[in-house]
Length: 223
Image 1 (cartoon, rainbow, N blue to C red):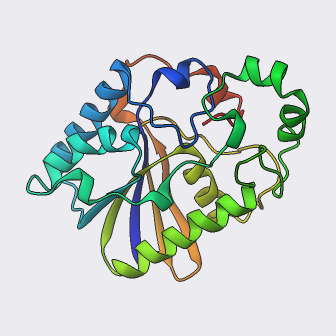
Image 2 (image 1 turned 180 degrees about the vertical axis):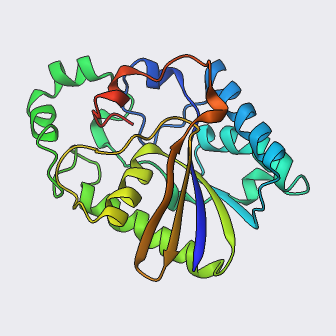
């Protein structure tokens, strides 16, 4: 049994611009850096016992994890703790594009996307089912590698959605049902193929920061 402390990366300008980020390497904006700092401050204040940290290899997760790493493991380098299997879903030809542009330039793909079907993916990208398999293979591997320990995982909204769906048994069809705020804290317990949610979307450390983008509240899947 392994406990994972899951964190979505802090905010980026592309979050605000409603762009598909996917595998594009986008840094945090000023709000995202402040979210990362507050996350680290909370870890320090609560003296949270964490045995290991791992994050996606994209810069927005590394910049989110770096302040926490200085609190938890100041002797380690963030680039030594990255795992590409924790990347966001690959959205193919729409990676980097704004939603409004996708609606105009790839109308058929957009309309199909809004059906939220597990075996559909944007042209050149991953289907939700392929993405889910990649994510859960990574989760099981991390849980087995650090069995009995507590691991902080800094990753992406889509990755957390796949973990939530697995834990709740909701299936891969349909829109996102869980809140996944930037830099929020989420805790799950993993034992074999069983994932149990212990806590989700804890944002007490982010009080008084600008509100999350509207698309998160509507559960539109733009990550």
